[in-house]
Length: 266
View 1 (cartoon, one colour):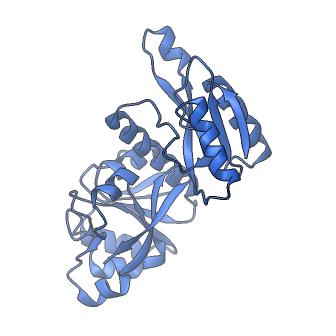
View 2 (cartoon, rainbow, N blue to C red):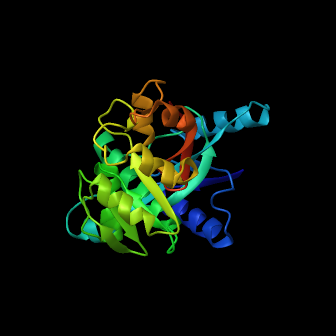
């Protein structure tokens, strides 16, 4: 574990060095707060708390690692009179209650997470795959990141950065997919009740879902949204019980930039 003392500037330096070595997602770090600006989530809540975290580690207590944000003041915004922290990346830190949270409101954190999810999905996109992008604000962030004129409540299809279909009907979506060699689906939880299919996206019929295939389906949702389900599974209600049963089971959920979870779908 790399232990360092300082503030956000130091955290940025550590991140830059590890990122340059290609190990920013593997190396474990812990920050001892000793700076003026400490917006990053890589620091313990106090120097003493950092010592307690290290003592637990040295005592052999199991510590899981999680991704924490590395932030610093957005200098351009600061010069314009606004104090706003800018996200520079993520580092692995102990998942310990004595680690501080990033200094932002819950709404700001959720907004940043949606941006992070969009960055991750766009980074994964291959030019030879037609991506069906579902409805909802999280999927809309992906469409905006791609720079396409997508629809908030509709189903769009994009390939190699080009919009192939906007707000498509089930029939139009089906016909387009017949012409594609490879396709994938990005969808989010709709309505706050855990439904991934069957609520607000009926264009994704059972024949469309079968054609795309379960392995090419990617769910996007913030960790906060998953936690709000309080352990309840994500839901599929396609109108086809056989398909619902075949698609049930743990599914990959992208929850942020280089952050994901396996969550039950049933």
